[in-house]
Length: 273
Image 1 (cartoon, rainbow, N blue to C red):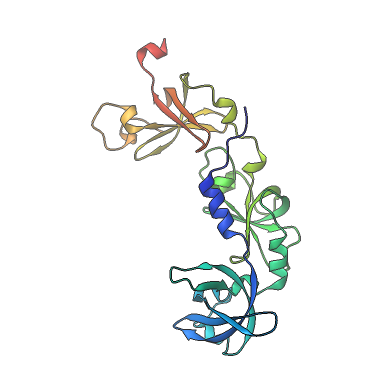
Image 2: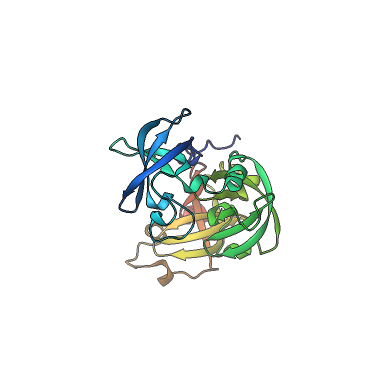
């Protein structure tokens, strides 16, 4: 069976985050906390007016961009798009560190890189990517990109100091970060499970949430059983009926490879025999 096609919405977002064209601009003033600039062409002539939003001015902390820029100063900035009024918006922070930018633009989505886990948090994992500029930590792995399985904390998958190999999702010059994925290098276990619709299985309840329960069907595969399918009784939450770890018999109603989810239904008496 072939791999599921990438979500076009995700691909569109990745395309928007890819580095834009670098322009030379001259500071002409400030509009509140934004920096007003004019584009300078190769001959040094003034051209189109643009704007650097405050949050795109620098990776350094500041009260106001005037602490870093002065009228008449020329600098490099990356095009990030046009707002509704048609004015070009740019990012100076994307070009603030030439060494960092050079490192980041070399990464294409899908490239495999190596690195060392720097720290592990409940929201994700920071990684020192091999070859990054000294003093920086450029890699980050979101919790959903760590593993195909259901986990309670990233420390169940990796630990600080561990060497890893991961796939690049996107390198962002504006954030100075490479978003990585460990599970992209692992086979999606759901692909081999796609023909199991209609099958009745018994497994432990892996997690209880207010609107249903997740059931462990196989290694790295969980299915979701909605509260409405769990019981006909008038209960507010599933923990009034079941406990984590409790064995439950369910029927596979749907295997969605695109969204990577398994929808379950309650197994009837006829299914159990």
